[in-house]
Amino acid sequence: MANLYGDLVDIIAKHLDVAADRIHSRDSFHTLGLDSLSIMELWFEIENRWGIDKELLDNGMHQPFEELARRIEQQVRKPSFTE
Image (tube, rainbow, N blue to C red):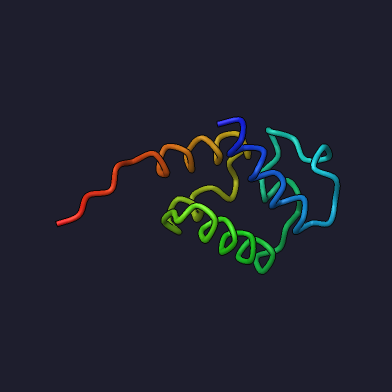
């Protein structure tokens, strides 16, 4: 998960135009003061990066980034079933 968390922080830092070391594992989109447009832009980027369900991100706005990264990783690791 360390790599996924690091990638998540890099995406957020790039979007906010800040150094990645200024974003902490306990931060969330909400605590960073992001407006809804910024959050949506980030969600689309995260969704595209890992191909995850938007519902996961909708529920992650107030979650610490470490928790969001854990939830993303769980979904990414789910086996996909084809019929």
